[in-house]
Image 1 (cartoon, each protein chain N blue to C red):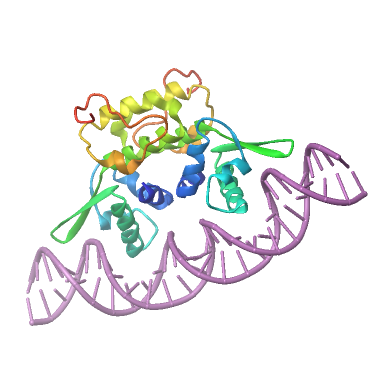
Image 2: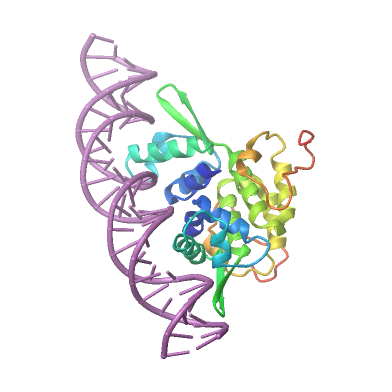
Length: 125
Length: 125
DNA sequence: TAGGTATTTAGTGAATTAGCTAAATAAGCA
DNA sequence: TGCTTATTTAGCTAATTCACTAAATACCTA
């Protein structure tokens, strides 16, 4: 949770995530789209990966990065539940998207006015 | 947008927002719930206010703070649209919640794969 | 093995952030 | 007016972040 929000606090990192919205890209391809040196981009990618927002996979000479949208959605969703309980309809929709998740809701935090409770999942209780 | 995410990057500030989820509180009441000095809390509140996430109102001796959930929802929503277009159902629900908003979607950013388009609103086009 | 490309690690300096204490401002009350 | 409470502003230090350059590592190809 903390790491997710720290990762999102940086504009270049949010842009990297947006760039990865539709397809995976190599570190070099990502760096090519920013006016920043490759080591700097590499560092941003490391922050995103530590937050669980992307994963990397080395294939041959290249390291490809792709999004892990579950963690983003779960962190934001969990937070919105805490802060803005009026948004309950969001929760239901997010649940539909996040059926396959298992643990990230714990990191995402809770305790607003009810425990995390994802309908349509079966293992919550 | 940038200010919203910077504001959310701090755990104490996220906790303050959660504390304000259900009712407004004075600066002193907020400070009383944290193990931090009042000036520090005051600074965090200033950051939250600069991001448009809370508003303050001075009444007599006290300064009361309350949430402005529209800005939070819109910023997160706009970002999710950029980064995670698969989450389109969220968008529709968020629109229902945010009927009354007018301009914050611009700050929230867009450009993922379609323009911001809130159904059920009348002024979008 | 040698040479080239891709990426990360190390190390540096400037800028920002987070918390503190002390002091200033503002409002309520005797 | 003078005292008390509530909050913010100023000024400080320690810690973190950001982007850079230079060097190291890993992989591919000849």
